[in-house]
Amino acid sequence: MVFNVLTGNTDDHARNHAAFWNGANLSLTPAYDICPQARLGREANQAMLITDNDKRSKLETCRLSAPNFLINDRDARELIAYQIETITRLWPAICDEAEISTVDRTYLWRRQFLNDYAFEGYGDAV
Image (cartoon, rainbow, N blue to C red; front, side, top):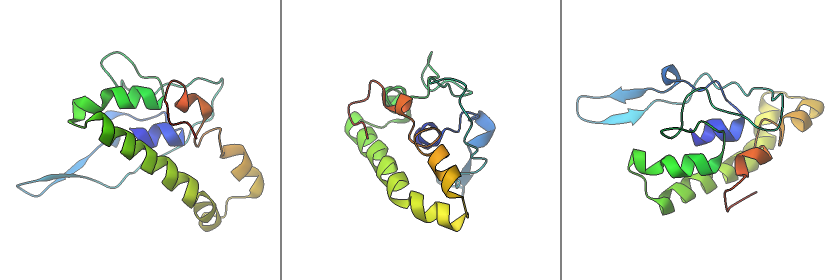
């Protein structure tokens, strides 16, 4: 869910979450159907709820939902920080590999990817 928020993938729904079952353990499948969406305004919402009553595309919303996944606050913050750092560090290489133009890179960065709205209310802003 955090990755979807950070990448502007607001079309995040239950059919985009899956797990492998080997008869003893569950593990998440690799991410798929990631499609950053253009924003009409500054705010964005996920297609499905992140918490019991909130689907705002914000890191704070994700952090507050962490206990639902048996993740404590410290670990949630570490997971969020790791994803921010990874997206930031790998952005140029991924754009090169995908042959994304300089114009499109500039357009996507901080609009769909690491949009400021995602960081509102969260203490570890980029």
